Every structure is written in structure tokens, then in C-alpha cells.
Image (cartoon, rainbow, N blue to C red):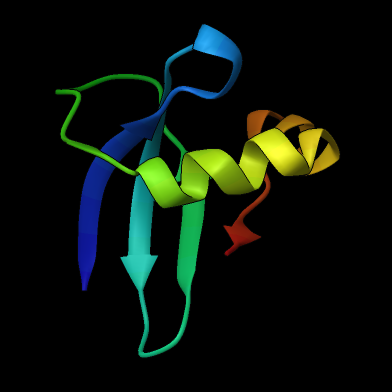
Length: 64
């Protein structure tokens, strides 16, 4: 399943495309569109791992 949403680690809104599996979520950055759903759990994940947030912003797909 695929959906759109956003995370706000460190008060900066980042739009993401989310692909869900049975036990994971893959997040990829997107540049436009509606805000969509707020992914609070993933936001906490990126606050704990700022290096992965940088990788997401560089265009890499991050599995949570």
C-alpha cells in the first residue's frame, strides 16, 4: 500500500511518500502535493537518527 504524508522533526516539515509492508514502512522524500497524513512514529525515529534524516533529504529511501 502507498500513501502520502509528512514528518516534522525539529520543526521542519518534510513531505514523504510512504510504502507500507507487513512489518515496515519505506519513506521517500517528495517535493510537492498535499500534506497528507502526519506520521508521528516515524518522526520520532528521525529525531533519534539525524543521519537518516539527512539521507532521506538526499533522496534515499529509508526503511523504518
